[in-house]
Image (cartoon, rainbow, N blue to C red; front, side, top):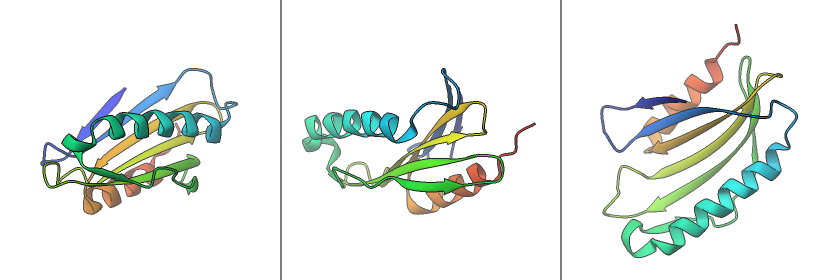
Length: 122
């Protein structure tokens, strides 16, 4: 597992290799992850704010060596203003599958997206 934090402590990117390789069904795994996340956020809505959408559409991600799928959530909260977006990526290099979870504001998300697109397999 790798963690990349911004200077603003509320913004992070976690990158984790998922056991099981590239053959896993990314859309099914993303659905499981997003359902669990929505359930958690609904249970804490008074504390963390409103999460949208509850059923995000799965989008394609294309990078240099890695490609895959991602979903994006937006959190509207005065308390957690730096955690505006949460994005789950499932990326594969053809052999392994990686989960990247990005949490932060629009600028942080854009920087993380560029970093993920630039990853190269060695």
